[in-house]
Length: 458
Image 1 (spheres, rainbow, N blue to C red):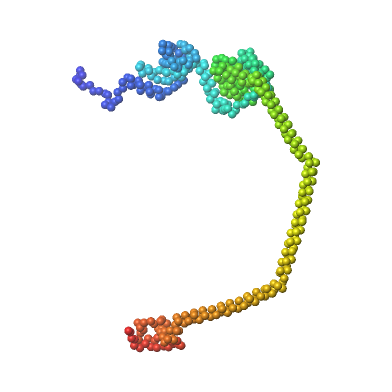
Image 2 (cartoon, helix red, strand yellow):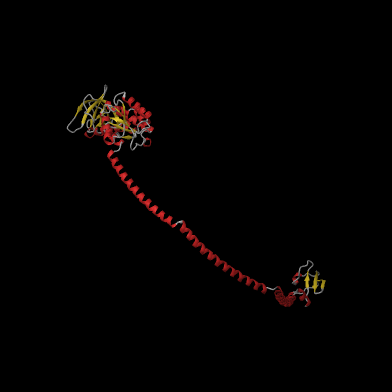
């Protein structure tokens, strides 16, 4: 349609352009923002705090130059350890996103804490990671506590409730073990120096088998001396086994991680460091009963052994042994006499047989017997030679006759001749002859030469 000037309106939208709805645009912007920024830690001041009946929290987080809307849903804010208020400085962990319904940029808060405590938390995590890399928390570095220490050292405030609880438990459980208190400040800037110095002093004196280091409960700031790097390294370097007993069971410090054993409370440390007196008395009673029974059993076994040894000694009485040896000597003497008589009889019999064999082997008789055998063998040998010569003579005659039968001389005696040409080749056929050729003939008693005249073929 033409406009008032008579020209047609032309659309500037490209034919291939993708056209978004507002909802689609907000959704794509939300995805791009969430993928690009993800979770962040952010510090600021709470303002415009709202608490609807749903249990969610809505507020703005601002600094001197800017602000951003925040939402903390009920599932996340139930873990808060403080009451959020306008004007309160906080540190929070949040996801950056867009509220699609309004297209507004906002933060979804997952965790929030007061700014002071949050800073301490970050310092705690940084030191924890650093010392973990150095291996100060490794289990193979931790020392084993003695079963019953000869003396216990306590590093804590001398006026606090913790030391009273520890002493009370120790007196109730095992009052025989002496205790040495190393007084220190457990709160404030000087506390870390006192605790480190007390650990060094205890190591130098070497008067205790185990140390309890700790204090009663309090806020994170109150317990911070036990999160100091100086204290952690002093605990790690101490050659005496250390039980960390800082605060309540929910409190956790760097000293707990470095120490050889962590107790949930100072009272719990006293429970761990010494055994229960009554349990030990019961155990000693049981051991005494076992020892008495063992001694009685061993005494009975020894009595039986003595009885057996006495019987063996009686059986080995020298008089009895001599009597047995005398009887044995008589038996052996009789056996030797009988053996000698038997040996003499056997020797006589062998001598008689030997004489008979000598007489039977007279040389003259043997010579005559050998002469007769030699004469017989000579006659047998002569006859055998004669028979062998006759057999060989007959065999030679047969072979001569056979040889004569196949000999060429025999053939020549029957009037045949052997004819050869001038080269000495045998002539078998007339085809081998040529007229006027000279040939040689062999008869039984000599040779002749001839010249071929006329050749006849049959």
